[in-house]
Structures are given as structure tokens and as C-alpha cells.
Amino acid sequence: MTGRLYHALSFNSDIFRYFDETRRDLYNLYNIRYVVAPEEQMLPDFVKPLQQFGRHRLYQVETTGYFDLVGSGLAFAGGKTDFYPAASSWLASGLPGAKQHPEVLIGSTSQGIERPLPLRAAVDVIPTVKASAGPSRGAVLSEEVGSNSFAAGVRVERESWLLLKATYHPNWRATVDGVETDTVMLMPSFVGVRLLPGNHQVQLEYRSRRLRMVLLGLGLLTLPLIVISEKHGESLWRRIAPRFVGPISNSAKGRRR
Image (cartoon, rainbow, N blue to C red; front, side):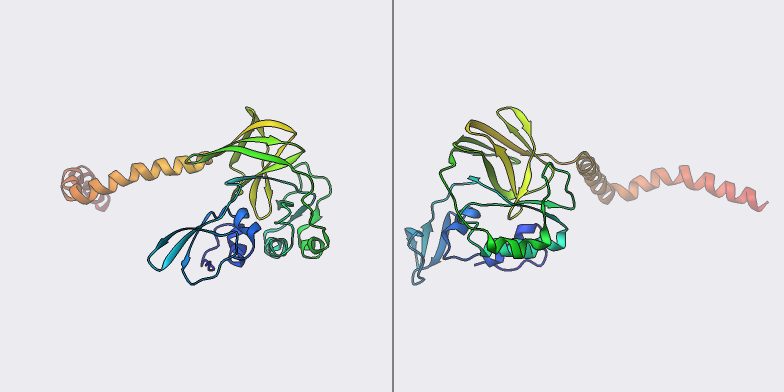
């Protein structure tokens, strides 16, 4: 089951509450590979039972993992307030099942996409698009998961996007066969990397901005100072106070005279 978070921490968290447990394409979209449910609950045939635990059962669903090869065919640009209606319309359509993920530009049209459609028009455009997967795009041959990184070996049979099922952010950096490559936002705000036919090694890494690292460093330095002040604050003040209080007091007396 899913619920609405009090704080929506990413674009796709807003629409995730519309997850439909009867749609196999949504399990793959969100890489939901395991399900725990009461034994009496009826589940779709593609949800395979693995083991019984008391009155609950553990089930498994086949997915492509953290990566998938997808198409696009559409590009939208607009503001943040236009995203939720557009993404909701996309999720309710047949495009996720056909692995068609439109490109999305939030607040900018300068990423090399010619004439993107207005994002506010997506609710009217998406229902008219024919959902067709077409010929095979290839396969994800391997994947690796690190603390702030993902890697994949892929075989691409026709030009495609490699979709990383993680929330898009400009701090994601990608390399394809060792060459730095741009990333884009694909519905529903996941990370996409364009790939040409052939075998490729793709690395994606999240790199924090320098300011965040500086603030983190200052925070780490502040913690021991707080501990020291809590334990030895009074004794330190007794040593330091005479050096400052005395001169200040003498200065004040001089001014009165």
C-alpha cells in the first residue's frame, strides 16, 4: 500500500500514491520486486509466491532492475506547478507499459531540445499518443549499485534512453564508455541517458555541490565544539573571562572619568 507523504520530497513522490497493484508495468517502473501480503489476499498472476511466513506470504515480481531501455518521442517544458497534472496523465495512460517516457524540462528550454511542447498541454496531448513499444531496444546485461552511484552494461539495438529509476537532479553525472554525457529528466522525473546502438558501459554518480560539502564540513567541526562546551564550558569560561572582562571593565571606568 502507499500513502501521501506530508512532505513531497521529489516530483515522482506526488504521483506514486496512484500506484496500481494490478498493473505489471508499474511494478517494473518503480522496480518493485517483492511483495508481502496476507495469505487470503488475491494478487495478479505475475506476482509469484516465494514463501509463507505465518499468515503472510512473500511474493516476487520480475523487473528489469534499476535500469531499463526506453523511448521518448515527446518533450515538454514548463514550470513546477505544471508537472503534477502532466505526470498523472502519463501514469494513467498506456505509455509506461510501452516504455515511452517523455523528456521534461522544468524552467528551462536550453538543453538542446527543439520546440518542446508546453508542459501544461501534456494532459491534452498524452491521451492522444498511441502507446506502442515497437521492436526490441536491447537489454540491460548487468548492473551495479554503490552508495551514490549506479553502473550498467547494456546492449542497445536501436537508439534509446537508458532509464535509471531514481529521482532526477542536475547533480547526477553520467559517463558512457568513459566519456561524460548529459543527463535529462524523463517521466516520472527519473534520470535518462541517450544511447546509440552497440554495447556500452554506463556510470551514473550523484555529486553534491561544493557549498553542500563546505556546510557539511562546518557542521562536523561544530559538533565536537558543542560537546567540549557542554563538558568543559564553565572551566573554560573561568580561564578566558578574566582576559576579556578585565580590559572591558577598565575601559568602561576610563570613559566614565
